[in-house]
Length: 188
Image (cartoon, rainbow, N blue to C red):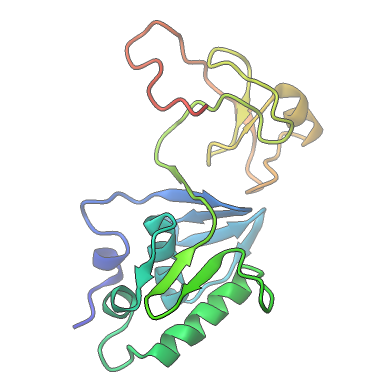
């Protein structure tokens, strides 16, 4: 029996999350994939497949896992999975023989070929995503709602608009050093 999407893709023990990989932002709460400011349309099954790949964080997702999490027994076939992987590769912009995002692991399954970043709360990043200038935890920086971080110069050059999601870049609240949990979640 096929489980509901909320049980398979977002089980109760796992809160909704946002992931970044390559130029993409996958928002599981809103069920949207962004590439820059553009929404990449995905069918329900493609969304489920992508969530499984992203959450595996580079590990192989077996065919059996795809079959049990995405399809009911009647539709769970190698051909159906291969067709959906092909459609997902196309949605991610892969071309023939280019496997920059999804890699086939013969006789086992598939894996994501790029690193993913889980966005599950404000993480104080230490550098600008555009120019890599260092930004201290108590220094001025600008962030969007997906925690993309930019130095003041780049934020101004970008007209305070995030190039990844087209959201507003706002002043990041400073985190005082020396307070409890001041270093928790700091990306370096």
